[in-house]
Length: 121
Ligand SMILES: [Zn+2]
Image (cartoon, rainbow, N blue to C red):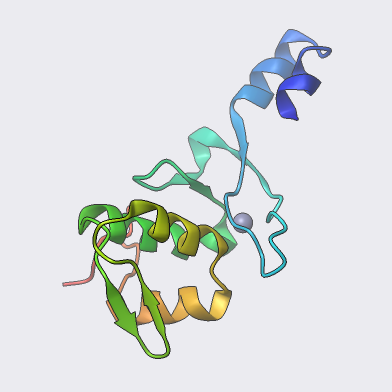
């Protein structure tokens, strides 16, 4: 959709659109977060997803998955992954409810303090 827009705009607009990207988060109705982010100023996780300030915990969780090879984890009433399928992690991180994401981040002790969502030691 963005690509179609830039073809009719001027060069400056085109460059600014190419530097922008939408937050990857989907809400409980599978609707996108919709926040337009400037790539250079935004948090990108190690799987390549960009996250707005409100959804950055999802990036911390994705980084945990990437760094631990998408393990099977259980926390409270939730679980993610089977240790083999990266797509399971990606679906959960993009589409999981706020309750689930918050539970996962709390359970794993993720803080994002190193700007990449490293696990707290
Ligand atoms: Zn967002």
